[in-house]
Length: 100
Image (cartoon, rainbow, N blue to C red; front, side):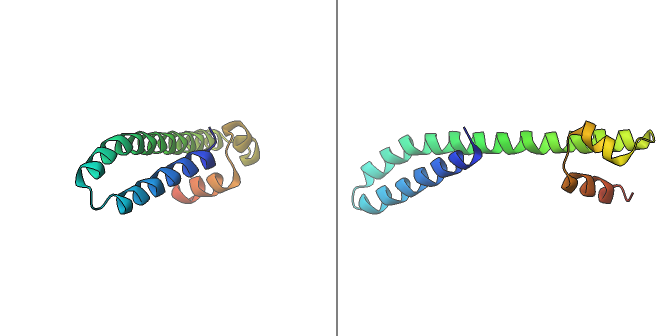
């Protein structure tokens, strides 16, 4: 599933949750039951989102470390970038963080 699709599903679920809460304000037991049903789905969606963001962040960190290790051996920056499979933004970030 694409990232955009996950965000759309999350937004839809949150909007549906808000609408149901507004409609069912007078009926406390309905709101409680709805929270149990919808809350589980939202928690799972949020957990997946956080997990995926963590993976992406970890891959970026790994790519920057590989890049820095390669240029540390004297490799050309463009070749190191290609082998580390990172974009210009991460090259700049890695260089800035390590004051190179």
